[in-house]
Every structure is written in C-alpha cells, then in structure tokens.
Image 1 (cartoon, rainbow, N blue to C red):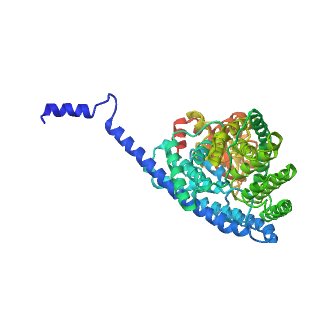
Image 2 (image 1 turned 60 degrees about the horizontal axis):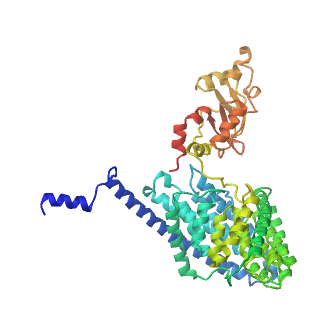
Image 3 (image 1 turned 135 degrees about the vertical axis):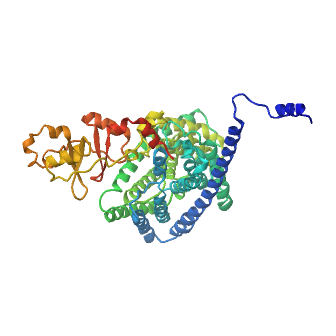
Length: 571
C-alpha cells in the first residue's frame, strides 16, 4: 500500500474529531475501566466481609440466643450492650454510629472515614446484635463496606481524581447494604440517597452499581438467594386501597417523627452519666421488653432484628391491640439499646415499625389483604425516617419481587415525606448539594487551625504581655491559658492600650482579659466561625476541645479563600 492510500485508510478508519485529544480520551477511557474494575473488586471483598458478619452474628450468636431459656434471654441483651461500651472505649472513645458515620464522612471535605475506629465499632456491633438487642444488621454492614472502600481507595489513590475522593466510600456502602438485604438496587440507591434529604450523590452511580452487583453475587453464592421475608400473592388494589396507602403514609410520617425523636434522645443519653449506670438501666428496660414479648406471643418477639416479630404479626388472627403492644415493645427496646451504648442499624427497625403499622391499619380498609398494607407501611416508615423515599420504594420492589406493591408504596412514601418536614433520623444529612463556595464554608475549622503566636499564663504582667507576646510576635491578640491547657480568656492590644501605662507593671493579664469572646470547637465550620465573629465584633476566635485550648482562627484565615479551597479539597 503506497503512502497516499495508507493516509486515506488512516483517515477513514480513525477519523480525527476536531478539538478531541485522542491520547487524553484513551487515557480517560482506560482510567474509567480501571475505576470500575476496582469498584467491582471492592464489592466482592465487601460481600465476603458481610457474609462472615451475618454468619457470625445471625446464625452463630443470635441463633444460639433464640434457643436459650427465658432467664438467659432476659440478661444477654444487657451483657451485649455492656460489652459494646467496652469495645468502643478500647484505644480511644468512639461513638456507636455506623450509618451516621458514613453520612458524616461523605460530607466531611477534609477527612476520610477513620479506619482506626473500624475494629471497635464492628466488634461492638457483633456483641450487641449477637446478644439479641433489637437493632438491624444493615448499619454495621454499610459501615464495614464503607470502611473497606475507604481503605482500598487510600492504597490505590493514584487511580482517582480529587472529585472522586469519596467514590469507593459510597461504592463500599452500597455493597454492604446490597449484600445484607440481597437487594443490589436497594443498596445502590440507599448509599446514593441517604447523605441528602432532597438529593442524590452524583458521579458515583456506575462504580457504586458495579460494587453493589459484585457484592450481591458473592454474598448470594455463599448465603443463597432466598428472600429474608418471602411475600406471597399478587396484591390487587383499588381506589380504596390507594386511599388506605395515603392514610398509612400520613400515620407513618407522624409516628416516624416520634421514632426519630426517641432515637435522637437515646443517642444523647448514650454519652451522659456513668457507663455502668447507663448499661444497667438499659438492661432493666430490655429485660422488661423481652418479658413483654414472651407474654404476648410465647416467643422472643422483642429480641433480634424483628423478622420473627413480623412473621408473628402477619398471622391472620392477630388483634390490633397485640400489634400495637408489639410495636411499642420494639421501639422501647431499640431506644434502650441505643441509650445504653449498643451498636447496630436502624434501617430494619424502621422497616419493622412500618410493617406493623400497615398490618394494624390495613384491617380497616381491606381485612382480607394481609400483604399489601404491611409492605406499604415499610416503604412509608423507612422513607420518612431516613428521608430516602426512592430507596424505600426500590426496597419494596426488590423485597417483594412484585410490581403491584410499588404504586401504593410510592403514594405512602410521598405522603410520609410531606409529614416529616425537615426531621431525619441522622443529624448529618444535608438538604442537597450546594455550590462551590457554600461547600467550602462547611469545611471544618480543623482544616486551617493554627497555634498562632504564643499563649499567655494568667499571672503574667501586662507590660510583659504587650512587649513580648504581642508586639514582639506581631500579633494583635493572645489567648490566656493556664498550666494544664485550660483556656481562660483573650487579651488584645487595643484593650491594653486603654489601660494607664503606669499600672502595666503591677496589673496581671487575668484582670484585663476578655472572657466573653465566643469559643469555637474544631468541628465548627468556616461559616459558623464567620457568623460568630460578626456577631461578637472580633477578628479571631480561640478554638477549644473540652475546655482545652487547641489553637486560634483569624479573620485573615477565613478570607483567604484560595487557601481555604486548597485545604478544603478532599485528597
């Protein structure tokens, strides 16, 4: 082939598109394939981890608890909560959060999931759930998946851009939910939807989908594909049933707000008082719920994630009062577990409450249909509690495998969302994605915290402070800190200038320091700091943790937006 025909062939076979850099396009395509491959491998690892977790907790530990005599079942949940507290206090004090920790890490622009806390939280989950405490397995599964994703991304950081710094965090979380529920689409949608109240995570769909599918395949290969709670029958519905779905959505919105309030109060109680007192009080309450469940159904209805309780409630001869009592026992047990310091998920407790609500209300509209309304209640209660209506409806579709549940479930979920307002079970959710500058204003202060200048002991003379600590270091103010690091106040050049010079040698700084300057915490955002400075009329804030001085932040730091953006960008 001569040069002329060869050039023509190259032009036809490989056309040149104006403005397109072929090398860059090829590199982008190759990197995309690599990212998807890494996400799939991450999902497979998560599937193995969740399968091991489910086997240990659900089949070995809790499976044994279910067969024990009643006296042992009364005591073991308290033992599990106590062991959970101990696990979380080993090598530092960690919170019992699992799903909340994922949401917090997703929005933290300067930090990653703290992998040092992973063993403690997972161990706490194992002892809490294995003892029969009424929480779900999905929270630890999601958290384990997010931790695996974060660890993989740290090791393979070169394959990801700055904008993709949370990609495997989300992919791993999706894989964790996908595996534990055997519902790959639910895992995908939940991981994308739960960080926001009215939005979805973007640019993470394909890797999260790949990870979720891989996790499901691995988990199903080990644990089988049988649904957790088989649902039989095709649910025919009419306009009355659709009206009933709206009523269930309304009731679910109201009761979900109550459930959210109980959970939030319980979480606050988990950090108050002496741990031994909290665990003992939680143990008494849990024992009472176990006794109540045994009296109600001659079975451990108040123990475990709640699948046994739901099967019991779905029997045709269960009365309205019995179902209400069962729902109350499980809410009380969940609250007591969280208040005592137990660790577990809240997805399934929301689902169980929704199913019981639907079972109770459904009899008023269609007593012969024992399937439709409990499933509708699941979608409404879950969607309202976590503010994830899309994930809730997808869960119903995958959970049942029947499209007839989707429309009533969607109606109930939408009505419940309207009733919920801005309430959510997670304090770390945000309404939606924000602009570049707004996102930077949410950056925690610890990203630009500095030990500017020197601190001043409270007994220092004013003349020494002025010449040595202020003028000598070219600073406008200095924090007053005692020997053990406790912050006492702030001394400023402007304030010292108003004092008679002849008294400087005999006046101590603790006599003239300002004590009404706002004190920030390291987890304050830049926006919080700017607002506090404006209201107080100051140009700097001392930053303290538990009363101990850790640094200062100045107005100069806050207005250097270029540096803030560089520091705030996740790596």
